[in-house]
Length: 202
Ligand SMILES: [Mg+2]
Image (tube, rainbow, N blue to C red; front, side, top):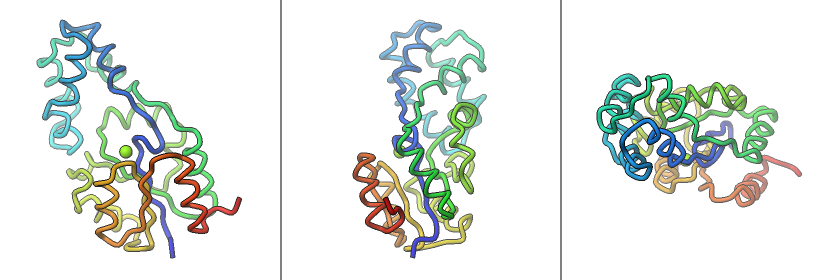
Protein backbone atom coordinates (compact mmCIF):
# COMPACT_ATOMS: atom_id res chain seq x y z
CA UNK A 1 0.00 0.00 0.00
CA UNK A 2 1.26 3.45 -0.95
CA UNK A 3 1.99 5.52 2.17
CA UNK A 4 4.11 8.32 0.78
CA UNK A 5 4.73 10.21 -2.45
CA UNK A 6 8.08 11.41 -3.72
CA UNK A 7 8.20 14.09 -6.42
CA UNK A 8 11.17 15.13 -8.51
CA UNK A 9 11.13 18.92 -9.14
CA UNK A 10 12.83 19.64 -12.51
CA UNK A 11 10.66 18.80 -15.56
CA UNK A 12 8.00 17.40 -13.19
CA UNK A 13 6.79 20.39 -11.13
CA UNK A 14 8.94 23.10 -12.71
CA UNK A 15 10.25 23.42 -16.22
CA UNK A 16 13.66 25.01 -16.75
CA UNK A 17 15.74 26.43 -19.57
CA UNK A 18 19.42 27.19 -18.89
CA UNK A 19 19.74 29.00 -22.23
CA UNK A 20 17.86 31.92 -20.59
CA UNK A 21 20.65 32.22 -18.01
CA UNK A 22 23.26 31.80 -20.75
CA UNK A 23 21.83 34.77 -22.68
CA UNK A 24 21.52 37.06 -19.66
CA UNK A 25 24.91 36.23 -18.16
CA UNK A 26 26.54 36.73 -21.57
CA UNK A 27 25.34 40.35 -21.58
CA UNK A 28 27.72 41.02 -18.67
CA UNK A 29 30.65 38.98 -19.96
CA UNK A 30 32.87 38.66 -23.03
CA UNK A 31 31.43 35.26 -23.98
CA UNK A 32 28.78 34.55 -26.59
CA UNK A 33 25.48 33.20 -25.14
CA UNK A 34 26.01 29.72 -26.64
CA UNK A 35 29.55 29.48 -25.28
CA UNK A 36 28.45 30.69 -21.88
CA UNK A 37 25.61 28.16 -21.82
CA UNK A 38 28.01 25.38 -22.78
CA UNK A 39 30.38 26.44 -20.00
CA UNK A 40 27.58 26.46 -17.41
CA UNK A 41 26.32 23.00 -18.35
CA UNK A 42 29.69 21.34 -18.98
CA UNK A 43 31.82 22.75 -16.18
CA UNK A 44 32.63 20.15 -13.50
CA UNK A 45 31.75 22.95 -11.03
CA UNK A 46 28.07 22.34 -11.76
CA UNK A 47 28.07 18.74 -10.55
CA UNK A 48 30.33 19.69 -7.63
CA UNK A 49 27.82 22.39 -6.70
CA UNK A 50 24.81 20.07 -6.90
CA UNK A 51 26.72 17.45 -4.89
CA UNK A 52 27.37 20.01 -2.17
CA UNK A 53 31.14 19.77 -2.56
CA UNK A 54 31.49 23.51 -3.17
CA UNK A 55 29.58 26.49 -1.75
CA UNK A 56 27.55 29.06 -3.71
CA UNK A 57 30.45 31.48 -3.30
CA UNK A 58 32.90 28.96 -4.77
CA UNK A 59 30.55 28.16 -7.63
CA UNK A 60 30.09 31.86 -8.40
CA UNK A 61 33.84 32.47 -8.21
CA UNK A 62 34.51 29.55 -10.58
CA UNK A 63 31.94 30.70 -13.13
CA UNK A 64 33.15 34.29 -12.81
CA UNK A 65 36.75 33.37 -13.54
CA UNK A 66 35.74 30.94 -16.31
CA UNK A 67 33.44 33.34 -18.16
CA UNK A 68 34.59 36.84 -17.25
CA UNK A 69 31.15 37.65 -15.81
CA UNK A 70 31.31 41.21 -14.48
CA UNK A 71 28.27 41.38 -12.16
CA UNK A 72 27.98 40.77 -8.43
CA UNK A 73 27.12 37.44 -6.83
CA UNK A 74 23.57 38.68 -6.12
CA UNK A 75 23.14 39.63 -9.78
CA UNK A 76 24.52 36.26 -10.82
CA UNK A 77 22.14 34.41 -8.48
CA UNK A 78 19.17 36.32 -9.94
CA UNK A 79 20.12 35.39 -13.52
CA UNK A 80 21.15 31.83 -12.69
CA UNK A 81 17.84 31.19 -10.87
CA UNK A 82 15.47 32.87 -13.31
CA UNK A 83 15.16 29.86 -15.61
CA UNK A 84 12.22 28.10 -13.96
CA UNK A 85 8.51 28.10 -14.77
CA UNK A 86 5.84 26.25 -12.85
CA UNK A 87 4.00 23.31 -14.51
CA UNK A 88 0.50 24.18 -13.25
CA UNK A 89 -1.30 20.85 -13.86
CA UNK A 90 1.40 18.92 -12.03
CA UNK A 91 1.49 21.42 -9.16
CA UNK A 92 -2.29 20.98 -8.90
CA UNK A 93 -1.92 17.19 -8.83
CA UNK A 94 0.73 17.39 -6.09
CA UNK A 95 -1.51 19.66 -3.99
CA UNK A 96 -4.56 17.41 -4.50
CA UNK A 97 -2.66 14.31 -3.44
CA UNK A 98 -1.25 15.99 -0.35
CA UNK A 99 -4.71 17.25 0.61
CA UNK A 100 -5.92 13.65 0.53
CA UNK A 101 -3.60 12.99 3.44
CA UNK A 102 -0.59 11.40 1.80
CA UNK A 103 2.77 12.81 2.90
CA UNK A 104 4.61 14.27 -0.10
CA UNK A 105 8.38 14.81 -0.34
CA UNK A 106 10.42 16.78 -2.86
CA UNK A 107 13.46 14.83 -4.13
CA UNK A 108 15.83 16.77 -6.36
CA UNK A 109 19.30 17.07 -7.82
CA UNK A 110 19.75 20.77 -7.31
CA UNK A 111 21.75 23.56 -5.71
CA UNK A 112 21.34 26.34 -3.17
CA UNK A 113 20.81 29.21 -5.63
CA UNK A 114 18.14 27.36 -7.62
CA UNK A 115 16.28 26.32 -4.46
CA UNK A 116 16.47 29.86 -3.09
CA UNK A 117 14.90 31.12 -6.32
CA UNK A 118 12.20 28.43 -6.35
CA UNK A 119 11.38 29.00 -2.68
CA UNK A 120 10.92 32.73 -3.29
CA UNK A 121 8.86 32.46 -6.48
CA UNK A 122 6.73 29.32 -6.25
CA UNK A 123 4.38 28.88 -3.26
CA UNK A 124 4.02 25.15 -4.02
CA UNK A 125 7.58 24.65 -2.75
CA UNK A 126 6.50 24.98 0.88
CA UNK A 127 3.60 22.52 0.36
CA UNK A 128 5.70 19.43 1.10
CA UNK A 129 6.28 17.33 4.20
CA UNK A 130 10.00 17.51 3.55
CA UNK A 131 12.69 18.19 0.95
CA UNK A 132 15.55 15.84 0.08
CA UNK A 133 18.02 17.91 -1.93
CA UNK A 134 21.24 16.56 -3.42
CA UNK A 135 23.51 19.40 -2.28
CA UNK A 136 22.40 19.05 1.34
CA UNK A 137 23.33 15.36 1.48
CA UNK A 138 26.43 15.32 -0.73
CA UNK A 139 24.96 12.79 -3.16
CA UNK A 140 23.03 13.04 -6.42
CA UNK A 141 20.37 10.73 -7.83
CA UNK A 142 20.80 7.94 -8.85
CA UNK A 143 23.30 7.42 -6.00
CA UNK A 144 21.61 5.00 -3.53
CA UNK A 145 22.79 7.19 -0.64
CA UNK A 146 20.21 9.87 -1.50
CA UNK A 147 17.38 7.31 -1.78
CA UNK A 148 18.31 6.05 1.69
CA UNK A 149 17.79 9.60 2.98
CA UNK A 150 14.26 9.59 1.52
CA UNK A 151 13.49 6.31 3.31
CA UNK A 152 14.93 7.59 6.60
CA UNK A 153 13.08 10.92 6.52
CA UNK A 154 9.73 9.53 5.32
CA UNK A 155 9.89 6.41 7.49
CA UNK A 156 8.73 4.41 4.47
CA UNK A 157 10.38 1.89 2.20
CA UNK A 158 9.83 -0.42 -0.76
CA UNK A 159 6.36 -0.43 -2.29
CA UNK A 160 5.10 2.03 0.35
CA UNK A 161 6.78 4.75 -1.73
CA UNK A 162 5.44 6.08 -5.03
CA UNK A 163 8.08 8.09 -6.87
CA UNK A 164 7.71 10.37 -9.92
CA UNK A 165 10.72 11.45 -11.97
CA UNK A 166 11.32 12.34 -15.63
CA UNK A 167 14.74 10.65 -15.85
CA UNK A 168 14.87 6.88 -16.45
CA UNK A 169 18.13 6.38 -14.51
CA UNK A 170 16.61 8.07 -11.45
CA UNK A 171 13.41 6.03 -11.70
CA UNK A 172 15.56 2.88 -11.95
CA UNK A 173 17.32 3.87 -8.73
CA UNK A 174 13.96 3.77 -6.94
CA UNK A 175 12.75 0.59 -8.63
CA UNK A 176 16.00 -1.11 -7.56
CA UNK A 177 14.93 -0.49 -3.94
CA UNK A 178 11.44 -1.87 -4.51
CA UNK A 179 9.78 1.54 -4.77
CA UNK A 180 6.79 1.99 -7.05
CA UNK A 181 7.70 4.52 -9.70
CA UNK A 182 6.28 6.51 -12.58
CA UNK A 183 8.53 7.75 -15.36
CA UNK A 184 6.98 11.17 -15.92
CA UNK A 185 6.63 11.86 -19.64
CA UNK A 186 3.40 13.85 -19.93
CA UNK A 187 0.86 15.11 -17.42
CA UNK A 188 -1.85 13.00 -19.12
CA UNK A 189 0.10 9.74 -18.80
CA UNK A 190 1.09 10.44 -15.21
CA UNK A 191 -2.50 11.32 -14.25
CA UNK A 192 -3.75 8.09 -15.81
CA UNK A 193 -1.20 6.05 -13.84
CA UNK A 194 -2.02 7.82 -10.58
CA UNK A 195 -5.71 7.08 -11.17
CA UNK A 196 -5.04 3.44 -11.98
CA UNK A 197 -3.25 3.16 -8.62
CA UNK A 198 -6.48 4.34 -6.97
CA UNK A 199 -5.03 7.57 -5.62
CA UNK A 200 -7.47 9.84 -7.47
CA UNK A 201 -11.16 9.29 -8.03
CA UNK A 202 -12.24 11.63 -10.75
MG1 LIG B 1 13.78 16.01 -13.29
